[in-house]
Length: 398
Image (tube, rainbow, N blue to C red; front, top):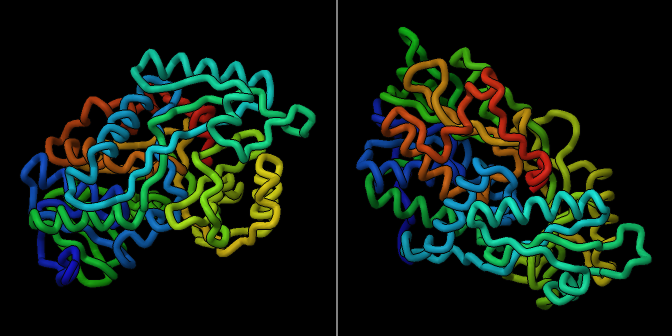
């Protein structure tokens, strides 16, 4: 394809909507603002290069098998959009429906997993319970022997889950949004939000002031820092999340396997490298680097489940900055400042939600009211107590 995929002009003096954060969520929100609501005077501001933050640093797992109705609603909406995304955008994103397996290693894991399968089915989400022998059929490289330290007692399985190519997803959305008139302003860090008379009126950036009719935050791990410049305190904490890839291998791993007990999740990318994710660093941090002790535990966990990987070599490691809320669910909606909207708190589940949250957040910004699917995830739930506790199904690790 000749020429740039999107326009990255100098910023104009004012826009109807300014989106802070040029990751997957910000780009998708801009696309659906233009496509679904006809709001095309939109600028997406990114402090680095487009989709160079968490969008470029995730493990690309896509699934919708969350426990609670509220979570299943928005993630299942996202998965349905994933299934038609290439046709929608006219751009290849390499969505690969290879299934997602969540292993159970204890009797409590089994009870929790079966509960989630039943909850998924009630919500119309495809879900199965696998015995150890069925796990071996779905993914032959998993060690299902019962004399191991963490024997596999069963697993949940979502056949429609899978992976996609993260950069292609971002490029596809940006290309489509740009064709509708959206501006993508790269190397433009937002240093503050201007508030006048109780409403957001613009942003201060390293490339000058930009006036805005509405400001939509979508800055992942830095959301709390940006929101604080408008006097809004968000109930999230930022942590480093680590991942790594191996050298290129022949196809050996046909699905996505996750384990909360030993805390690793593994898939094989389209090119052949093994993609492995770990748990978040316990300390709050904004660094995009891993810590050796986390990587060491991650490797040990992987070898517990996949002894066949013992001779694979690590190619590279990286970290992303994820924001985690008290109930391990996102925060999407209005803020106490008029015309200031927030989309944050996705922890490590942001990539899989990209189409769904883009759709719902665009509705919220365009209409000033939450979409029914993100209404349960507004800020006021931390006042009312109507929490959506997804620590079990999210595990704040994938």
